[in-house]
Image (cartoon, rainbow, N blue to C red; front, side, top):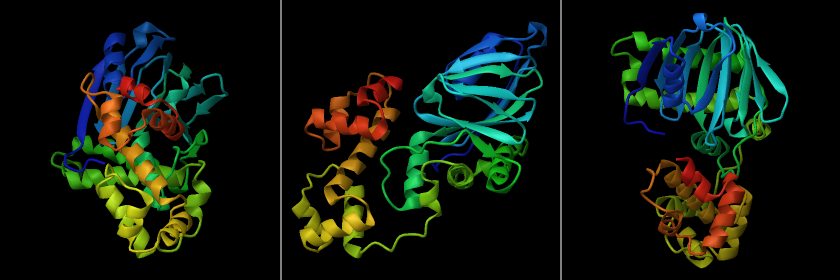
Length: 326
């Protein structure tokens, strides 16, 4: 997460379909936007605040709409303040969002919205997958190989779902407060982290049981020494024996401790950290400035075929697909 800059607010008001498309694409993702109701009533209003790993917006169109889009690197949460809309992931079931029920969906699965009511005004939050995965790993205290799979709904009438929605809405209200708390980078960074953690605690997903389980025993000092060293210098030419020296224990003791407290071998942890760094760098690369081979070598991957296979297993796409998506 980036904690060195303040939140950024932007507002749009337009009766042009093309301008509405461009505004949404600038903050969320490219999409097909179509009128399904009266063109004379079309009037888009979009308010957006950028919070690093999250984009929080309030959008309305004034008439019935249809739209579709796809974006591999994010999750999306949306809930109407009024009216309703439907979401279909690929050829799956059609799910409806109402004022008490937010929809949680993965735009990588080819999203179709064929029912957006004329009176619909919605809170819409884009969440970076990599940032959410890192926050999940912090909460669990271990590496996670794949992003969580979310259930379609978040209950925003009570409990953590209601709290999460109100916190997201508060960020939008701050646009009318000159020199408010969100003008301080430290506060923006903490709110970003809270919203990421809150989403994991307010929704049903594949790691929910693990989050609610009792915390694991504290890791031994040997494991922490190795993890700290790998996090600081992941591209170093580590082997199992060198890691045991860093941990100041025997190789067998270190391997058993890693399997018990981390859920993988020491060398598997090295590869996991390197894959995360590669993924982050490929997603952040400006077009035409690097290649998959250069990035893989930079982070210590020598066997490109083996690297590509591990990368696809870890992130569900090839490294070249990640780079092209940028």
